[in-house]
Image (tube, rainbow, N blue to C red; front, side):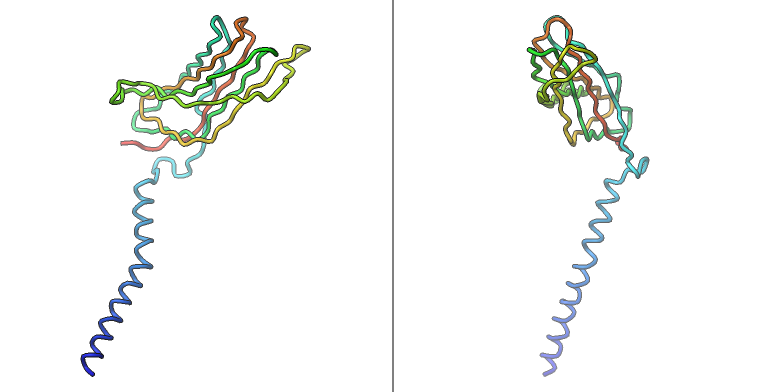
Length: 180
């Protein structure tokens, strides 16, 4: 009888310990994770538009819209949204729109640029300040890209408008977090 009593007491203690761990452990894990990813400098993580640029088509129908933003030292940029919209005279098209992150240190393959597709969708006719009808190509993508300190940014696109009548606006936005 005494053996059975001790056995039940031991089993009860094990069950009680397991219940305490089930309740306490997730909170502890969540607290540790929250501490690891918390941004002390900007706890509200206010979204800010970091860069906007404009480009016109030219000879060869190639756009290169270089931004003047560089990710500051000791910060990492978390990019949340990338947008682009272009207007071109009817009969022209746009293709191969790319958002590029220029990294300060080459990767293992020697690349210093990471590219992301930004497919521009033909939205149809757009009346560009007068009787001339243009086509509007646009896209807005919610993304989750990271850029290290010293990174810069470009937008690229191709068009068959060699007369220089195509106009594009690009932007990205996100927030900075502390980066050791």
